[in-house]
Structures are given as structure tokens and as C-alpha cells.
Image (cartoon, rainbow, N blue to C red; front, side):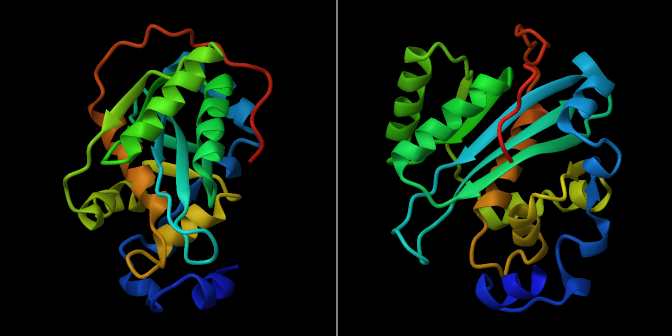
Length: 220
């Protein structure tokens, strides 16, 4: 809950009225569609799937960083983004590689954006090799981030505040990190969300993948 998050996962408390992301502006697609499959069936081939991975790997234990994999469905006509999966966890490099490839088994991604600064480029290579060996298409695009992370995340504010990004209610860690930004102790989820939204918005390449989708979905 929010009280637990405030006491355990923040550097400093934040006043909801002065928050970058307005607490009462968050909109949830699962208030309208009961399941992800229902959402997909509603919009069909108007949805294009993207993912982004922030492969932050810190020290193990409570002080370690989270790695974040965010999956969105972008509506081609309206540009609205539906966050389908917000997988934020502390894990080993091997676990992260497996997690990214697993997403590719369930989603026909137009692009998967992965931060590749410094050592992270080696992790991208591991993901590419595993995906290739298992016949999984990821369409990876490496991202070298040179801009200020705070500014990148702040750029999402109008998208969230006017409902152009919609979440699912079970994505509590991502939502809490956004609500308490920039005072939260971790911002890996918002950083990955900024990567996928900003990159998908400027992606103009034609999707050559099938618009069909599997009947089974990864666990939340």
C-alpha cells in the first residue's frame, strides 16, 4: 500500500499536490476491459507492441537496483499507450535475460528497446544470442542514454496526467514509483516507461510482423 511504500521505499515524503505525476489523474485500462485479451480483441491490429528494458544491476539485497521491463500496446490511430506488463524486480543478469526472451514468446514486438550504456551492451548481446537460439524474434534496438534521467521521466508527465498512458491496477510498484518521483528510492520502472514511450512515439517503421497474438499470456 501507499503507506508502506512511503515508509520503506522513499528517500523523502512527497506532497501529492506538488507531485510531477498527479495522483488522481492515473487511468486504468482494466477498469474498462476485464482482461488483456479483451483489450486486444477490442482494438485488433490497431495495436502495436513495444517493450523497453532498463537493465540496472546493483548490489544484491535491499540496496540493490531493480531491473525493469515495460510492455506497452500503442494504438496506431490515437497514439494512446496501454501498459500491459510492468515487470520490475531485483534479479541476476541470467534471470533478466530469461525474462526478456520470455516476453518475446508472448508478444509480437515491433521493437524492444534496451539501454546499452557501458557494460549493458554485453547483456544485450546475451539476450540476442538466447533469443536467436530459441527462435524468438525481439527486434532489439539498443539505446544509449546521454540525456538527464530526471528530464526523461518528467517528459511523461503530460502523457500520464491527461490519460494518454493507461495502466493496470496490479502494476503497483510502477505506479508508486511514478507517484513519488523524484523522491522515490528507485525509479527504474519510470525510466523504462520513458524509454518505451519516447522511442515508440518516434518509431515510424512499418511493422512486418503478424498482428495475431497467442491465446496465453505471461503471468503478471
